[in-house]
Image (cartoon, rainbow, N blue to C red):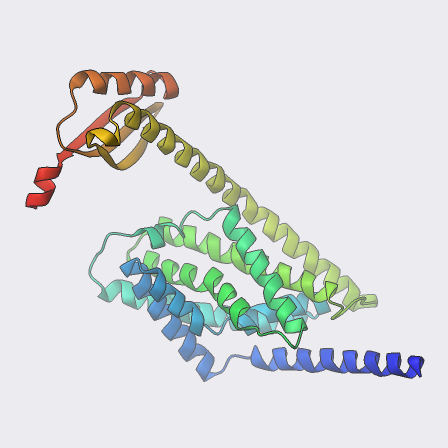
Length: 330
């Protein structure tokens, strides 16, 4: 009896996997609704990026239909199915093109606005972004493999890694800013590769396609190797951005600590912002300072001396002081 029960479970397992594969393959084929939802999600994301509104951007992620075609790329890699891989990649490419085009339209018709933090944060991707994307691919593939789990939240996570960068790419084109476009392009490509690779490895580990022999096995091996190489290639610039961001953050914290030691909050001083500029071999620090009374020159000299000893003799300091009274009058 135990042997027959195990056989029935094995047959049911195979049937479930075959049915799941067919469902994902069918759902990853782009139709009119897919393109409409991609366009709408890109529009909402673009408006959210201009408004610097996290809530609006999240709304765009909720309706983006990217989960099926992106997971299909991972499943195609796991199967060693080159034809399925091409079909899924084309579906993602078409949807991405629609998203970029509609974001361009928003950028063109919208008045020229200062680029906020939500846009700029997606132009210098780092390794943390890559880790989130890889985890999203793992979560999406795992929930798809486990039929009793909902794929809604992993779908949002996948959209979070892809829709905002696509909209930023469109904004970069619309504003004629190649730096914005290229930074967002790097983020999008890196996230797409990480999601697909995470999904493929999860599908394989879940026994979707445990062992492939002959040509299919070779194709899967080649697809995994190529994906890993592409991921390694994008890791290099992202590692650079990660180190740069950490270094900049540490410098800003050091400057803030030094300034607060000599101009403490208990005396009514508040640092509005710390900006760094590097020209040639010289650091230039610009601080926006609020306070009830203008700091005496001796204190500023102490700050300059500490900054010079910390970052080098060529470090210059500019403090823009705005008294609280003038802020209230404005």
